[in-house]
Image 1 (tube, rainbow, N blue to C red):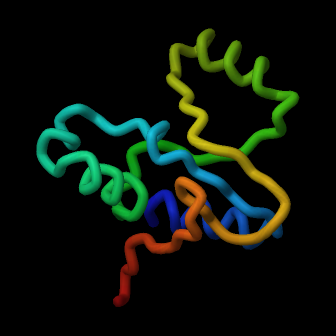
Image 2 (image 1 turned 90 degrees about the vertical axis):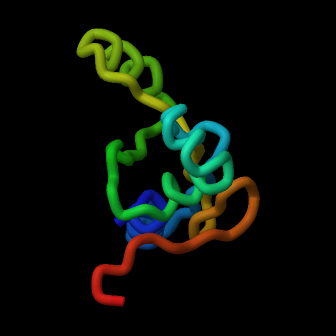
Image 3 (image 1 turned 180 degrees about the vertical axis):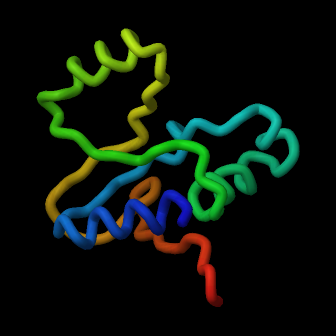
Length: 103
């Protein structure tokens, strides 16, 4: 629940590391105005109200995904990459978090 938590599940189960570039996150202008740059990023990374789908795909599928997205008029945003390793990293720093339902 939240990008970091869900991406963490993907990385853990796939035994890989996920690297996110926070500048690439699709954040609305309204949220940036309301919370400021850092607050909006934190909300996008850790908030429990997901508004985008997160998925991974092999680099050699990039052109096919862009074609599919254009043909369906569905925006796709590449926010990072998957590498060997473990954990989730945002802007080069280890990161975790997300909404905890029962905390």
